[in-house]
Image (cartoon, rainbow, N blue to C red; front, side):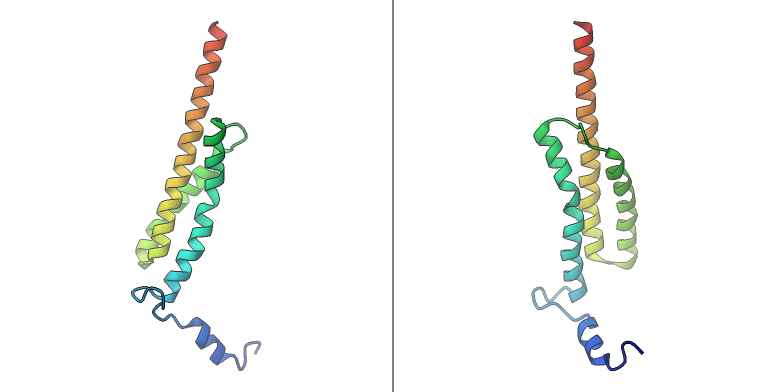
Length: 121
């Protein structure tokens, strides 16, 4: 009842036609790529901050690890539904999250090694 008389509007907005920008893509894929960009790059600031500081202090790697694992499931889901945006962005995001964890562990080991060296001196 709420949407009575909105059939034309729904048909106009929800039609998944070829994109004007890239005719080989559907409109939904273009929206998917744009939306995926935002959620994928959300993890990049923490990674850049660690690299600039050359330290993992103040970073919790648990979120990146959990996100990386579930993004692998999203890639599988994207393969099942054959969605290019879902596959592409989740592959990129899982690499970013696992890279964040690797950088975290690198700096953690580096700190532990330097602490051992100071204790021996």
